Length: 496
Image 1 (cartoon, rainbow, N blue to C red):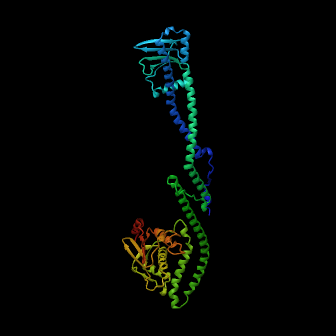
Image 2 (image 1 turned 30 degrees about the horizontal axis):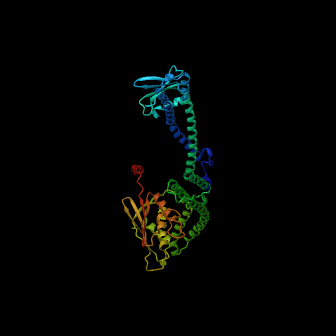
Image 3 (image 1 turned 60 degrees about the vertical axis):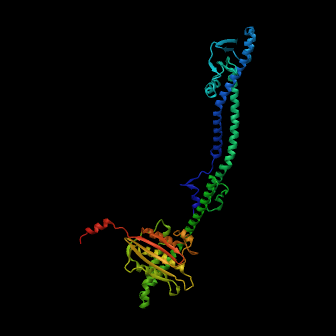
């Protein structure tokens, strides 16, 4: 037997059972989790950096507004140039102005820049609309001049601030580094937690199923390869474990049956070789019986010779069930009643057996079938019926085997009925399965399996019509072979 060796590889190629860590599900899950969390952090980073830029500018404008309020109450011209520079350096600005009632006043100024690169209205700037400018400042800022203006607090005055963006650029870089560090830390922590949870819930059981399948493929007949499902799981993994366990046990059962069949085939082939020699000798001795002039011998000698001929033919085809299919039937027109009589004679029912045999087939009933194959079908059905009724000691119980036939159009139907105890449930579930459909202890179930195959070869069907206590009926349905129109036309064209 080579089933276990063949299941480990396909088409002669060895299975690659080693999975590198970098290509395993665990590594892929970890990398995907980190990537997805980083992607989420990137989506969070854009509004975060824009919000940080707006807050920074609002704080500088609020400081400038406070300085402007003090200067407006006093005399801004009284400030010396050095004092103005100190004020502007404190907030990092170049100029501070206030607009009140449509009149703009420049309060403090130093080194007025020749041009302003960007004008920012704080009161109208939003986080989403500021994201492009924030990214531009983060990537390319540091040498630009900004004009920031807007109202501050409850004041109706509009304050203006001209400020370079190098401090803003440096602050945004620091904030971006902080966000990136926190994002990486969150990503690693989240990935580790998600990985640990999914590894325990999914990857671990999948890995166990993979090991079970590899172990089972190495030794399909070993119970150690069958996975033990976690009975408490009701999710998809639990269903997969239970289905895998059921499939492995079913495959083990099938492999054991195949092994038994192979062992049986080897044993039968050895027996068949010796049995043919024995039957050949019996044929030679039975031929001599024809020379005996005793009327009794002359009466049973032809039947004996016919039986031996069938036995020799059976031994030559005893392994045909193990082939792809039986030999195609050689169909002829048969008198079914005479064939049933031959089956009766082969059963060897004695008068003291308590079993009655009735051949209820009309003497003129004809059927289109292979004589030897139909004989085997009826013999198997009748022998099963006899074995079911045998061994009953009570003479009051009726043990009767009846064979009758009917025809409907071109379809012949043979019915084999007995008054036995009926088929058990297990036999009915595996009725035509070899080695599983036997109704008695020690039986092989081959009889019905062979009969079913032979009837199917005729284009017919074999079915259990009824099986209750006191009545079991099998029906063999065989249609006449179709007329070959080409041969019929050729026969009509032949000259008389």
